[in-house]
Each structure stands twice: as structure tokens, then as C-alpha cells.
Amino acid sequence: MTETRDIQIKNTQIREIQWKNLRGIQLENQLLSVVVLPSLGGKLASVYHKERKFELAAQYRGESYRIPQFGADFSQYDASGLDDAFPNIVGAELELDGKKHYYPDHGEIWSSPFHVEYLPEGVGLSYESEIFGYTYEKKIFLSGDRICLEYDIQNKRTEPLPCIWTFHGLVRYEEDMELLYGEDVRAFRNVFESRELGEVDRIYKRENDIYNFERVPHMESETMVKYYAEGRRQKGFCGYRYPSAGLECRYHYDAEIIPYLGVWITAGGYRGDYNCALEPANGYYDDIRIARENKSLYYLKREKPLRFGMALEVCRI
Image (tube, rainbow, N blue to C red; front, side, top):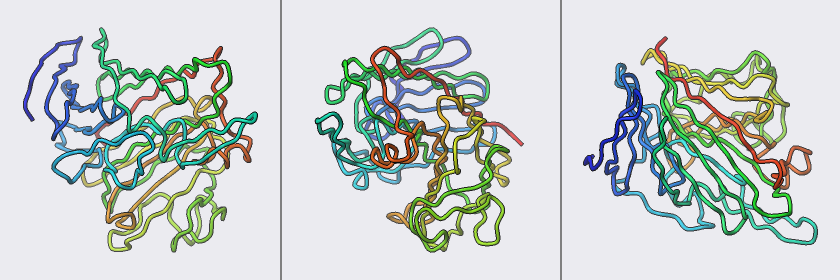
């Protein structure tokens, strides 16, 4: 990494750096170092705990990032780091009020360049969608062992925008890692056919004799799974425990605004990748059409911006 700029904001050091082939912004305090890539939707390319010398973010194995265009096939690009999926996940065409809306694979944000602004508390990122007519603002700052994310998404058009927001945070896979859920999670719905979980829409109790939802599939399994906590969440909490590293990463958010929770894990089953993602979302699930059928599709109205925050706590255990 080559340092090109150095800014001190409160207790955080902010540097503009070279991260592989892209401009990166590094936020660093006594506990954490975080690298943001504005040209890839504000992706958190690195979340590093300094004392434990532990990298949480799933890392891109290539030497340089390829820059996608609108509508690009997500599977042809890197699956790494922590970013956002908006206004959808699964690519789809939706007809609403006589108009057709095309939603690209994994949404628009992951493939979009963001404008950067340095704020008193950290870094501000912003993007304006010409296709969908919304503005997307994201603030990132550090507070002790927490990475704080604040969102402000506004519809600039008259018609409501059908959309789903999902935290698409790909983290490091370790075979002994544990998944943490709130006490209100009592069952899971399978949404992807697999050897482990069988057919789509099968529901499992949290504790069962078939699959351990607190753990990840074994490394040699070469599989992938995707499931959702059944129903709306009452508590905005989930996370990971890495026993061998002595660390936990806990997500804190408002379950009134982000009521659903998806889980994606690939243990070599997707392109040979090893990563997983706890995915808080405001729609259920992934596909705009499915969310509409489930009466969980969010409509972003001009007069009511979508504003919320999320904190990623990376702490010792």
C-alpha cells in the first residue's frame, strides 16, 4: 500500500492509499483499521483488528480489481469485502403500474463509483442513480471497537420505488467459526436447494438433528447454503465468533427498519470461494418479485427517506 494523504479526525487517522489497483481510504484508530473502496460502492475491503492481527473481511485473491458496469453479472467479479445490495439482490424485471423496472444482478450499488467527502466524524460517500432516480449517502466512522455506518437513501421521483436493501457483508470463513443470532430467532427457512438443507422453503427449528445453524459447513464439503431466519426480527442483532482468534464481530441495527435476516455461506461450493455473510435486510427475500408476493417489499417514497444506522462491533472474547 502506498500512502498518498493523511488526515486526523477526532481519534481516527484517515489516509488515502493505494489498495491493489484502486484508490482506498483507510480509517484507523487504536483498535481497528478499515479500508474503503469508493469506486466499488464503498466496499469495506479490509476490516482489521490490530491487537489480534486478524482480518475479518473476505479477501479478494486477485492482484487487481475489475471494474464492473451497470447490469454486470456479479458472478464474474470478485466476491469479497463488505458492501450493500440495493435496490435488490436477484436480477429481475418487475412491472408496476404499467411500467417495467429492470433490477440488475446484486443491485446497483456494488458496481457504482461514489463521491467522497471528509466529515468531522469520518468519511461521507454519496451516489445518485440516473436509472432509478434515488440518492444514496453513506457515512463511515470509527468509535472504539465499532465501525459505524449511517445511511440516507432518498427517492427523487414522484412514483414510489419498490426496493430491497441488504447488507452484503462477506467475511472470513474459518471452519471453527460460530454464527450468533438473537434470542428471538427460533426457526430458519431454506431459500436455496442444497445437499445440507434440501428443497427451497423447507423450515427448520433452530435446534434440530439435521443441520447445525450455529456453525458453517466443513471445508471439504464443497457446498453452499442460503437461508433466512423465519419471520420478522424483534432485535437487531447477529454476529460471528472466531474462537481461535479470540474475537467476535457483532452487528447492531434497528430491527423496526431492517426486520429480516439472511445467511449465505460458501464452503468451496461457489467458484471455490470460502466466505459467509449475515445479511440484515428490509425485504423478504432477495428477489423483488418474491418480496412482493410475501408482502414484504419496501416502497421508497419521495416524502419518506430511508434513514438508519448499523454498527459492526469487532471485539475480543
